[in-house]
Image 1 (tube, helix red, strand yellow):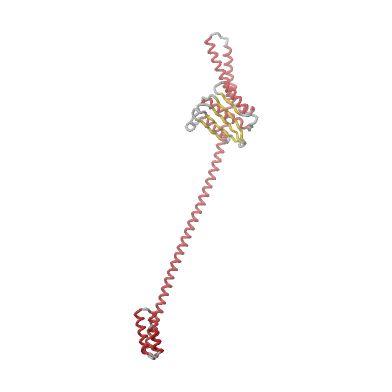
Image 2 (tube, one colour; image 1 turned 90 degrees about the vertical axis):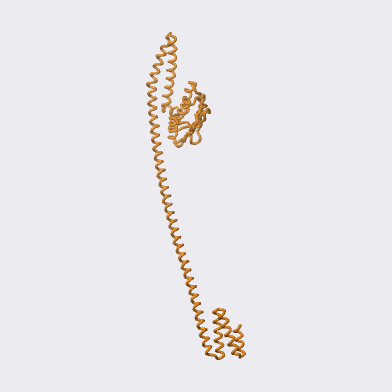
Length: 353
């Protein structure tokens, strides 16, 4: 305001008052401490002195103005330099942060790549180990099957030998004992007759058992007549003793078996029947043969005393049955409860044999 009033006074020719007014404006600007206002007031004071012809004060005012302007320019430059330096430092820090982030990212990528490589290595090792293990297990199963088949083959040969011994030697001798006992039937001593009669019945029973056993040990005869007729003959002979009433449920015309399965299936059935005779204390028993698609099922059940399948120790007979079933690629299941009988189910894949 003082500067504007000074300009008006100059226009009116009142130079002294104008100079005084500009000097006052400079004083107020210095009190305010605002460099821009001071520089403006100093510049106006220079122009006013020059205009009124006071060149000495004009020169002094100009020098003050120049010094102040240089100082302001220097401050501006320093400020700009400080800003640039701050900006540089910030950019440098940002660049360092970026480099650190990139380094961490590279380390993370390398770590993940290492983990991925290790995972692939472990997976490959696991697959290779599993392949080797499966191959080893396959060879082991094949070897076990070969051993089992050889064992069963050896049993079959031994059965033939035992059957021949029973039929040719022991059976002949028992028959001779029968004939000798029969020759003594005319004796008159009652006590002797009772002993002879009892011994004769026992000899007949032994003779029948030997014939039955020797017959069941001959695979050629069983394969010749077929599975169902062989089982029918076996059941017919067993029912003579009246200990357990056996029933065969099968249709010979609807069931066909590969020849190499006839004797193994008969032997499995015979072992199951033998278990009933030895352990079941049953009155009735049933043997059922069914064929569905490419599998054969033998079901042997009785009304005997049964047993707890979770507690009973597997006997030699069941182990033999299990071995024979496994050699044929089949499955064995036993359902039984105490005082409720036993049911054994054998399933054999016919096509697989």
